[in-house]
Image 1 (spheres, rainbow, N blue to C red):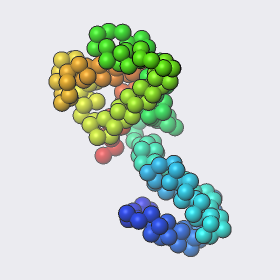
Image 2 (image 1 turned 180 degrees about the vertical axis):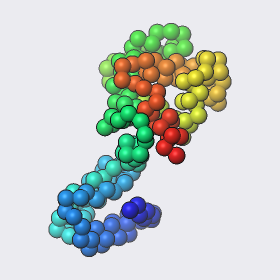
Image 3 (image 1 turned 30 degrees about the vertical axis):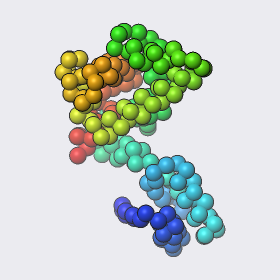
Length: 199
């Protein structure tokens, strides 16, 4: 059963959660799933429950994207999806670290300019890869139409779809296409594709 509790007061939410979770007599081997906005909030919630009730066990704190991925695994009638999305932000960060140093064409001049800056080059590469992975993650959630257009369009049409300066859209489109060519990256296994099927 899905129950949604909302408040802008964290103490009110944790009080309600501890009351309900502490009073429930359920199977101790069945995990209680709680959707949280960050892993830190999940840890804090478990700590609060342990302080108030004496124990916090078998609580599965999930981010919204992880919950949605589990729902895809349970309900979509297709070959078994992997345990974790290959397009998850942290996995995509490492894949981008592999790709970005080799992106030397003209549309990647802003990217290469940043990577060639002063300081630790590996740190700059990691930070940029993490930021771009976050950007793609946001596109998959909020702009799946852009992602789907990039996968099926020519560069001219793809860059015209995004309301940004054309050069920026061009390298994002080009980089997304390179990501899809990596081993294990199936364009049918990211949220923009799976969501329509799921709905």
